[in-house]
Each structure stands twice: as C-alpha cells, then as structure tokens.
Image (tube, rainbow, N blue to C red; front, side, top):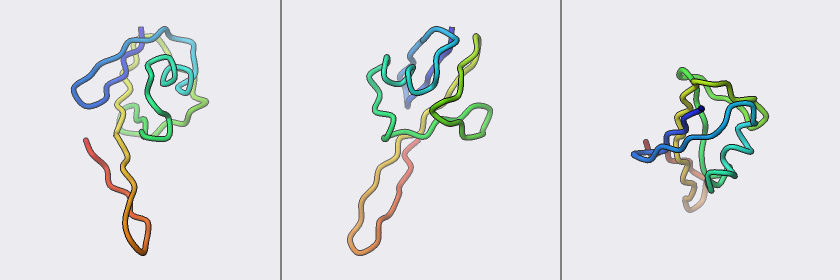
Length: 73
C-alpha cells in the first residue's frame, strides 16, 4: 500500500496509480496540496509504488495586492 499523510490524517491507496488518482480517490483537492516524497516535490502524473509514504503540504493562497502563498504543515 501507499500511505498519504496530510497533517494528522493518513490515507492508504493501492500502488500503481498516479498521484492525481490517489488524491481524488482520497477526496483531497489536488490544487490544495503539494506532494513530497523523501523531501522532494512530486508531480501529479507520478506513479506511486508499494511502500511509499507521500507527505502532503496544504497550500493556502490569499493576499491583497500581491498573491501570497502560505504553507501549513
């Protein structure tokens, strides 16, 4: 299984699917997170392998004049 971790929640998905499919299956909005594996960002078309742990960082955007991105761990 592949483990997705978002804050204190853990989701398990089957290996062999793309990150995008895994996020959608777990009801996680792909536009609201950045996925990392071993400290490196991975893209939505990445095929997930058995035993991997993917950490998801929630992205919150907002601001007044300039768009600002804030990361919540």
